[in-house]
Image (cartoon, rainbow, N blue to C red; front, top):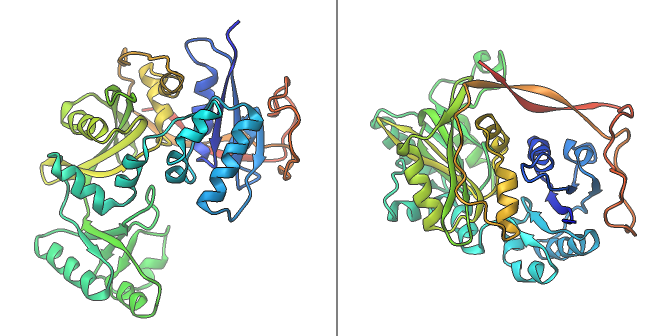
Length: 377
């Protein structure tokens, strides 16, 4: 009898409840038990897991590695999918492997390159992948220079942290003075330049921003699955243009994504994002982790999470080719159950994987959380 696979996701995004669903509905019909940890006791991923624990707060990266090794040993984890403290964890991959746990993440060198967007842009330029004009900004004067040069070229300037994930800290600079217009409707990413400069003058906290032109749609996120041999097994683009989303296998997006994934050894699941600068695609960002929207590839008949787990276990799925491209769709909020009560700090577990699932099924729930779902257009 084939044993079940034990997979751990640490402090991951709410959307990864769908990642967990796909692991359970894998085409190999393999039993999967999912362990989840999080800092939020009401995270939907805790409710969706078979076993769940609250993570301790304020651990240093080194302290978190010790905590993670203990989790893997106590819960018999076969495959660990780290998001929090990914860099520290992959630096200790050998210790996890010695404990019988495969770490589903790239090697430390690849994680380090793409942690800093400036280093990343310089590195991908060196292998011939186009990037937009960019400026590293740490002061008021550098910001003014960057904005003026971009505006002189007919571009709208925007900025984001030089390191960070997703759209956190992204703002578009405007010359429009602050007025009631900025206070009506929903919050906007637009921020007046004079307020940004005033904030810089009024703080002693250092800033490290990447300033660049605002890029145009479509945005294409290429989900890649790459083996430890640096060979890409899967590359599919997810397109985004306003509300409309879809899929593409156009080589203008896939070829540079493969070049990055193979050239830098982005093992297992990565997400490489492009937008348009003028009439050509340029790199926007590289994520060395599974994208929150990875589950949307199920509309193309692909189960990318399970293929990645197979690779981590040494079971090569071969080239993963979508049998079809799904129709265009949009994303809306849906409901997911939470645990009936907030999760307390659990004591030491005596049985790392109880026979009965810990997640609620037919029992009533105290509240619900929203998760993005897809609907056809």
